[in-house]
Length: 222
Image (cartoon, rainbow, N blue to C red):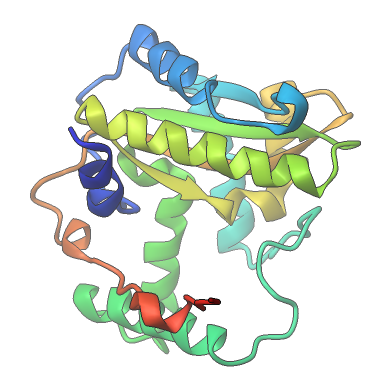
C-alpha cells in the first residue's frame, strides 16, 4: 500500500470483527515500525500496553459502568478546548450530526446516544486494545512526538489489512484504567486505541468525515 493511500483511506473504524484475532507478533511488528517515528533528541517518550481477554473485559466493565451511571470522570489533561468557538465548534457538530444521522439516532434521544457511545468502552468489538502512556515530566514537545508515533502505528496497521480507532474517551476514567493496566503513578494516560479487522457489513464504517480544502489552512509567503 502506498503511503498516500494509507493516509487518505485511514478512518476511525467503529465496528470490528471480534472473532478475527490479531496475533501478538503482528502487534509487535506494528509497534516496531511505529517506534521509528521521530522524537526530539530521540528520547522516544511512548509506553504501550497491549490488552486482551479478561484484562480488556475488566476495563470495559468498569468504564461502561461509570459512563452509564452518568459519571463523566475527570481527565488529567484537556483534549478539547475548554471554550468552544467557531470554526471548531461547527466542525465538531458537523461530524457528530453526520455520524448520528447515518445511524438514525436523534441526538436528543439520550438512551440511544448512550447505547452508541458506550461502545467506545467495548472497543467497538476489536480483539485488541492498546493504551498509551507518557511520563508526567515530559513536556509539550514529547506530546507532539507522540502524535507522530500514533499516526505511524495507524498507517502501519493499514498495510497489514487492519484498522484502528484512537480513543480519548478513556482519558476521563484514567483513575480506573491505569490501575487495571498496572501502570506506575509516574505515567499518565494519553489515549486508548482499538485494533482489529473492520466489519465490512457495519453501516457505521461507511462514514467519512469531510476535510478542509488546502486553501482553508495554507498561507503562501513569497
